[in-house]
Image (cartoon, rainbow, N blue to C red; front, side, top):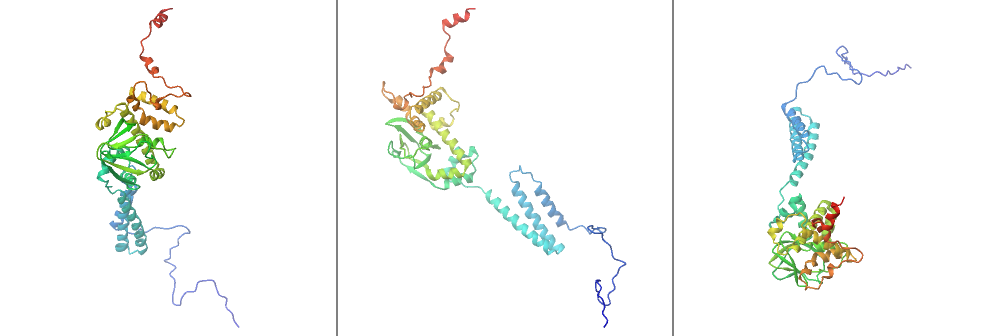
Length: 359
């Protein structure tokens, strides 16, 4: 029985003779491009130009992401046309179709974010005067005013808060229209005009202590309309928005400062309050001294701040010989002497001049 050993050579079909003379040997891990193919169609090059232009757009440009996604979308569409009509490459068409969908969705989303935000007519003046100068985006302002707040009205003579009766824990409000009058035990303190917080001193002084009552009476001196937030829900919202939290801290502090000016000059009107100089005057320095003394005279500094902000100007309305209990000095802390600042303007005495002349 004859057996034949199978060779490891590749078996070729009968009648097939390989052409070894025209075979080209290619070295291992090397490619040879002796004959370059013809240049691709113009659509291919326009698509690559769109990619290049989109990638070199500087990030300092305001709309650079929209331009980038738009050019990438156009480039992918041109690649699909080139692969379908001129190349007949199914894989290139499928991949660029995927890229086209992704970039198109991003492009639509960016356009949606840049859409003009329509602010309600009643809130437009509030945004332009208080929030737009601080670079608050319209969409963020819309989120602030579109949730957990409403617009309420008061007729002339109706009370927003009653002294020692209304709780300060429920709300925070900004006056939109009209005028309100603040009084303490029947003594007029100051007015509140549009685009100003109604209860900013109470909001600031009772952040740590809850359950407090208004120390003043706030009455609508005209038909009023105000924006009212739920204090608890507003606090939670500001905690999730650090930028807006800092904006509110600044606005409330600025509003308290304006109320200090109005306490020094109760006749200050709305137009004058817009043009008021922010440089500290002598009256404001004296008010700060009184605030420091009143805070020192109480066991709780926040209560002292509240008493000062709403009660300091009532001292001028008291009868001679009576002093306000909120302006008494503390036994623990020595009050600031107002004469310290006036020493600069005192003329030198004759004794001091004689001592200076002695050798």
